[in-house]
Image (cartoon, rainbow, N blue to C red; front, top):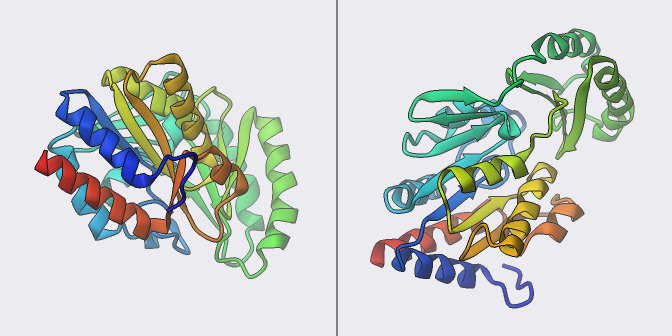
Amino acid sequence: MNDRDGVTAEAIAARLVGAHRAGERVGVITDIDGTISRIAPSPDAAIVDPICRAALASLSGRLTLVAALTGRAALDAHRKVGLDALVYVGNHGYECWTAGTIAYIPGANAARPALQRVIAAIAPLLLPGMLIEDKGATLSIHYRAAVDSTAVESMFAPLIARLCRENGLSQFAGRKVFEVRPALQVDKGTGLSALVEDYALTACVFLGDDVTDVDAMRVTAHLRADSRCESYAIGVTAADGETPASVLASADTLVVGVEGVADWLTDLSQAISAS
């Protein structure tokens, strides 16, 4: 755990418990991969930490909102976590799974032909250890399992940038992954803002670990500044040796990896249950 100007993981939990006791509308929103699931060689190989799952299940019966905000497709996120009571905002904010129904933001599916052209151009060039994850509204090109990730970055970053320009798409980078998305003003920040508004949250915490989570971390700061979350809004990073500097800088406090998230969620769920 890292203390940032007196903001500790324990203090965050205590503040949320106090808000819950006061009858406020409290939300816990978490990323999946790298936060409640350890980074794996491929998306299919990732396993949600059972301690995290149990804590989220407990919290979902007591808080106004427990949600996963992820780069995975919403349906895939639901299958991976396996908790029906959660809300799943997938594809970095382009879609939302709630009680078995998926809703897409306007324009989310209009880019399918462009995404398919990118797949067709990149697929024949993939190096061993690379894979394309077609998530419907977005694409992820993973290269964690490649022999030389530096060579992959040098070769594919400019190629993907060019293909995105030619097809009216946007390119983003994560931890050993390229993201290709429709050119809309949508990200985890807009996804978090929508959850806060839709569920009228007065206190919330967001947990993440990667570059795409920075947008949501920044939104927690804006929520505090403009009082949209009247009580509390905070960003927590699950930090490890690969955590990008921008993620470390944007977080209000740090915990150590998935294990730290599991411990924090467990402490919070126990305190909420006791309250």
